[in-house]
Length: 182
Length: 355
Image (cartoon, rainbow over all chains, first blue to last red; front, side):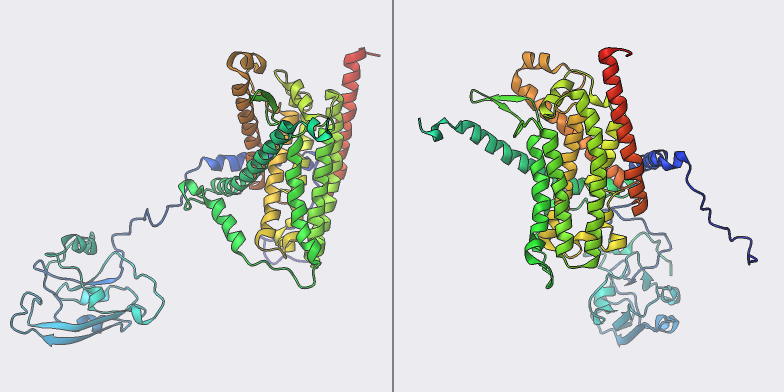
């Protein structure tokens, strides 16, 4: 039969010669290979104790940022929600009342801000859309959970810790990324 | 005098203690063999292996044992219940019985008595080991048959035929060994090697055949046809669960330990300390230190063999059934006979010169 391609080849089925029938040379060869592997460096890392570094452009779970005085930056303009291709973001705006100046940076703020992490594709368009540097993608992943409801992250989950009261937690959440100038 | 009073009660107590120690040690060794097996497999495959339970995963065997004990005991409805339970029992029993004639060390001096570190110095030691080891196939055979499962039965038959074929070659190599030693007692054989050349130097081919046959006897890769998981869904212990399965697996590891001990004893000088004159050392530093070091030495030799068993397991794929039989009948047995004839010729030549 004509072969369709030049790649097909008849399987060799010639009988083993004496040397091969002894099996021992092949066995010694194999054993030396496996013995060499004992001293090889292992590529495994022990995960919870050791972690591999993320790439500098890694896009993880979103964070709602605060300014250096610990005030929320978000003004609930809705640009992120418009930019979001997965329609994962919703928000409700509210007006800042007198006496809340230490909580919110501008007169309008987000009373409710939710991102559905099951919809989010971590594209980072919300970060690009935000004029106030209020939302950005951090270096942590969304942890797994048992129910769908828990994946709708509200302000409680998203808001970064206050840099004045909890500087360490803030620095940890902030990660290594450089601050954007507005 | 009453006949009971003539019994040396100290001897009985001494032997009872020795038996308990040796059984406990074989079980602990078997336990840590499972751990070592996983570690060796891991390092050979560039992995870490068990490292979560305790330091370097040292408590992993305990966790595994606990898991096996907690599993549900399932006895198939249509199985022969008595034989189904007897199978793993026989496997374990025969595995543990072999340790009786292995000399674990020289003599230990305590309580004004010389305690020989051997349970029974019977003058047919090797034959006893052979007898008991060949009974081990009954554990596989009975377990496989009683499961009332085609795969188990096939695996058991394969295992039985394999063990019988390889036992022949093993016995023939031992005949050559016995021509050299002139004794079947393992203690005598070790005694002859003590501070002399080991028998491996006289019987390299015999050792090779014995080693291969020991692999086959222990159902270890490349001869693990009776538990071929890809062909026979786990083979003879397919229907077993919980500690009955554990017994089968454990018996395999105990067998490995014992056959390593036997190989070390017959061919590698047993408890002899290499590069050291044992008798002089004993006179200089006392009998007990010598006996302790000898036990340690034997265990080092055994550990090397056990590592070798594992190293082979994670290197060589399983033989096909026809390859196995060809190797056993057409290679091992003729080689063993050749070895026997050449040994006999050389012994006669040394005794009488050239005709």
